[in-house]
Length: 169
Image (cartoon, rainbow, N blue to C red; front, side, top):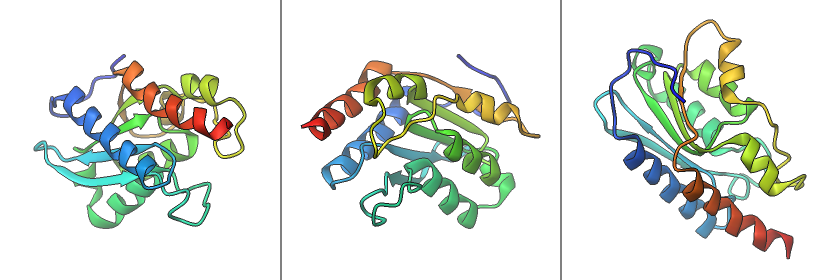
């Protein structure tokens, strides 16, 4: 599903797989397997961010997308962020979608949907997932955010499946 705007065409699968690699690095570092990257209008990766739950001392708000949006809004002006794309392993939750919106990032491309993630993890205390599509959050705003996804769903879901399976044991 695509909501079109005037942002440049990019190789979505390539960049999404790079976000998956960041998620895998987060997992290998002892964190939840979520990751994202920020790509500028020229196709350059300008930021990477893995989940920070463990790295940030058990901070339940240290989602990769929120952390990246915060870093991006400190580093780049809104006019520049409007031409940027966030690639993320899973659909931004309501909190992260709000951070993306407020930062000024113009496009989000995600792998696994929030609905699918909730079905997979259930009511896990480390991931009390909200089944609220980021499109719904962005639609309530006053500026457009293009959304593309879910994409490469099976690959994205596998990052989560293997991690949460070990959490049940």
